[in-house]
Length: 292
Ligand SMILES: Cc1ncc(COP(=O)(O)O)c(C=O)c1O
Image (cartoon, rainbow, N blue to C red; front, side):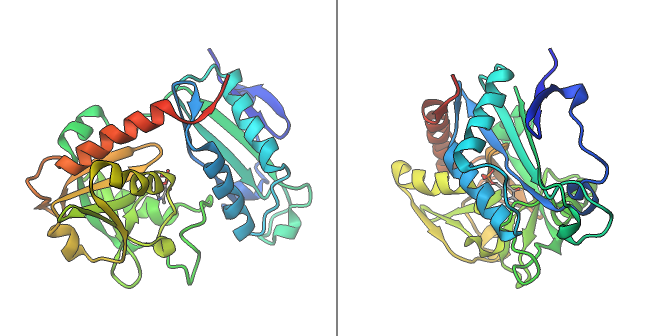
């Protein structure tokens, strides 16, 4: 059955869900979005995702034409109209339609609001979760906060797409990006962690997206008996780590077993990583905002 998409005030079948070619989201990447997941008829950390969307919008001086409560209700309604039990939700707010020219004042009609709720998303095949991912360090650096805050979840993903193309060309599963100073930043669309001496380390969010999965893993650390730390670290720390993994709403927790041709730990998904994957699964399937 065809999915139903919310576009600017109405729910329409997917094949009829359209925005104009003059939308500044398309023309200039002028907009923000979220990636949210539903498990077992509940939306995981919905409030936090909505909050982050408003923060991203505020950062680009975009007024979302709904209250947080209204947007939350629209997200849940889009899930209901698509009978979502487990699924992936993508709210998008663009600057809206306007004349050519990047000045946001040209988008006189106001923002476009789109919500997609699809029943499934699988980023990597199951085998990658059992055997682990191979990463290469990208030659592209993550856009620095001096140019555009990497904490804004905006419609500008070319920095990460360039890194992903490079990783594809090297036959790797994912790219690891460094920040402008050479410290580890994040993967193309996921945060990055290493495990060293029974402690988790992930870079501070000044150089990457404040990932909801990242926050969740830091919260879960204590429950599996490890300490979670946020601090800058280098590729040396990655190569010398006992375990590594990526985190993201779509990817969840993905074990990393190789970076730049060097095995991480024993070259298989690590013990702490596996414990966190289990704890994460337990949490996402038992908490969240009920859809129905
Ligand atoms: C650049 C980037 N980093 C990290 C993440 C992971 O964030 P989250 O766990 O909130 O999905 C994402 C995905 O949204 C992303 O696009």
